[in-house]
Length: 102
Image (tube, rainbow, N blue to C red; front, side, top):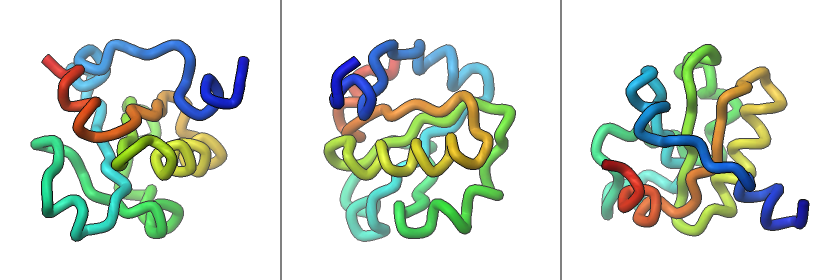
């Protein structure tokens, strides 16, 4: 698997299914970026706060992280996985992710 495959996850889960299972979308952009547009119902936990705010998330539920382009969300995904979150996926850019939700 190449670098992009590792960053963006090669196999994409069914996002709508994950949300039906009680999953959450976490937008890791800054508060200002989030205010300028976001996916309805998503949580805003900026990347620089993810390590100390992950207690707000349920490790037993799916987590889809997103940002502007997918780079910060890749970092957030790695932090969450290192802390016991097994069902976490980098959804990439929030606008792209929004288009994939039904």
